Image (cartoon, rainbow, N blue to C red; front, side, top):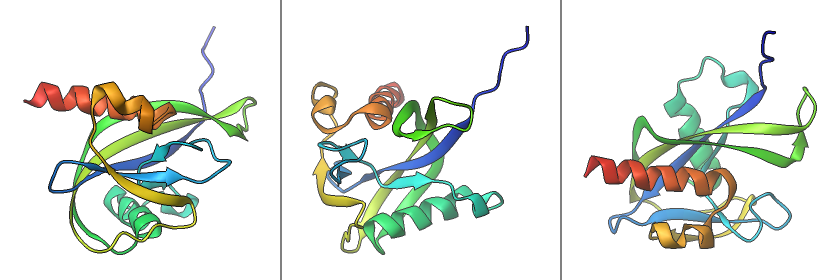
Length: 154
């Protein structure tokens, strides 16, 4: 029997690191799936962006979520993660499945100006022991994979 194909929304997220190696965490708004935790800058690909280069999509998302900051983006994924969105229904039934692709960028300059999607921000030192204090769902899994992948590089 052939298996049925799944339906995913794709999200591009960024580990934006400052000169201390800390990552920008965006405090999630009340009522969202990350309520009480932090998200990373980035988001979903829009329907009209099918032909748009990934770097341009990431640039749009970061501008929308953190303002006009200067950064150097590495366009090689550093982690992947999946989760279900409990607030969205899939056209196939059940919850929407999210596939998250994580990139790394170095913050250079500019004032962080968060959008209405978030209620604050913090520069977070990523440590395996404290990830669950800051992140959950795909961002938590992505941060775990990112730390594991970074350890392999060293």
